[in-house]
Image (cartoon, rainbow, N blue to C red; front, side, top):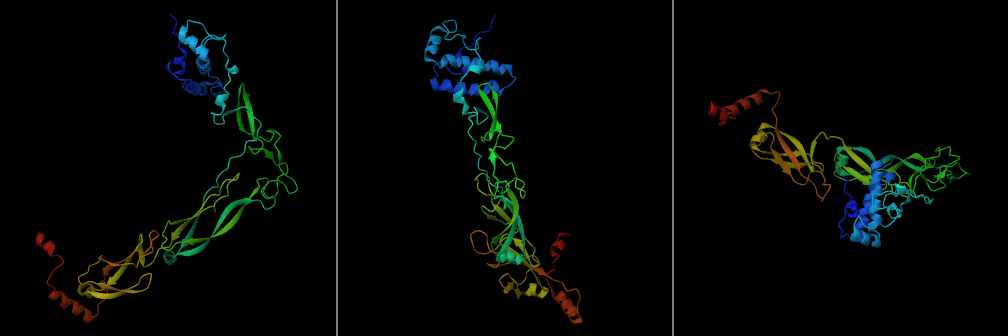
Length: 368
C-alpha cells in the first residue's frame, strides 16, 4: 500500500484558507531551513527542500492553486515536473532572490562591492591609584598613566612605509570579501589576504610593522571625590582604547585603593573611633577631647558608661559620595585598667572596693 501524498498545504504547514502572504512566509521559513547550501551532504534536507519548492510552485500561482483546489492531487498538474516532491525538479533552478537578504550575510551573490568594515568600540581600560586615608576623605587630584594604542607617528596610521600607500587587494579586488560558489548561492567570507580591509600594504612601515598603530603612554588628571573609599570607581568617558573603523573610544575606569587609618574604622560614611577612658571617668561621667577629621571636639561621656558603648558625634564622619553631607563619628568607649599602681592609687581602689554596693557578678550568684 503506497503512502498518501501530502497536499501542498500540508507540506508548507498552512491551512487552505491561508493568504498569499502567509504562504510566502511559510515557504521562506522552510526554504531557509532545508536549502542544500545550508545542509551540504544531507540528502534528506535536499529532498525536503524540493518538496517545499514544489508545494510553493503550486500555491504561489493563483491559476495553479485554483486547479489544485478544484481537482486535487489526482487532477491536472501545472508544469512539466508534477506536484510537490515529484521528479523533474532541481533546486539549482530555483530563484530564491527574495531570501538572500534574510540569510544575515551567510549567503550572498558576490556583488563585487566593497564591504565597509563595521565600526568597533574601543576596549575599556582600568587603572588603580592608592590614596592615604586623609586624602580619600578630603578628595584629591592625581595623574594616572595609561598605555593605549595610537596612530603610528611615522606612517600616521596607514601602515605603509612613508612615500608609499596601501594598494587595492588583488585577491578580492577591493571588496574585502571572497566567495565560494555553490550553484545559485555563494558563501561569502572576509578576504584572507587583506583581512576584509580591501587594501594591502606592500611596503610595511618599519616603525609599526604595517599595523598602523603603536603603544603610547598617556597621562590623565583624575579628580577623586571627597569621601572615596576602597573600590570607588571613577569613570573617564572616551579615555580607553581608541575605536576602529570610526567607532567610539572605550572608557577608562580609575579604581581607588585607600590605606588604612591608625585611628578610624570606616562604616560607609560613618567613622568609628575607639576612645579610652579611665574607670572613674566611665563611672562618674566626664568630658574628654577626641580627634575628628575636622579637628578636635569635646565628647561628653555619660556616667556609668561601659566598654563598647557608642556615642554619636553628628556630622563629623566622612563626606557622602551621594546626596551630599557627611556621616557621623561613632566614639566607642573603652574602659582602661592601669597596669601599674602607686601606693596611693592602690589604697584608693581598695577603699572604693569596700564601699561598692553592687557586684558585677550578682546575676551569677542569684542563679547558683
